[in-house]
Image 1 (cartoon, rainbow, N blue to C red):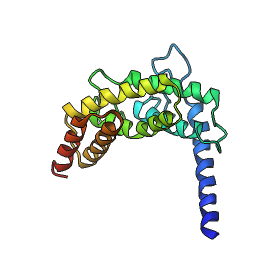
Image 2 (cartoon, rainbow, N blue to C red):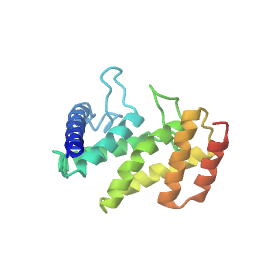
Image 3 (tube, one colour):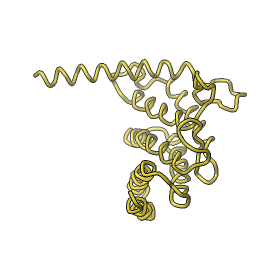
Length: 193
């Protein structure tokens, strides 16, 4: 059918774009172990590695890693790079659960953690579904737990940030059965949105 052909063409175009993006991202990943940004992705324009960017790239890596149509499917090299990226993201998180966002947010903000968690939840679900790699699941869970605590205890100010925070907290409850997260999500949603 025509619809199926159009969907197949879109899927192919999306896959090509994602793989092209991944090639470029891997080219800017910091692989020098002595560098404090080891595992992050250096922005060519600003020469900074941002944890939110790394979280988004890690999710794309995970999607490609588990997609049998991808050239990166179950690639051991990609998996090693994913571990580096996740360690960078986890290492960028403060003890209070916040992360910095140099270009798209504030420093040490709970909302930054919400945006990172929103992306990383997809990666977590894929790893969980594939019953794959306890280390990755453990690092992601720790990141989520700290981030959720930040979202429950620190202010999230803008409407957009509150929507994302509420969504993430509901997903957090689904994954880890923390009903206080849903209560805080309800609070965000009723807070002048």
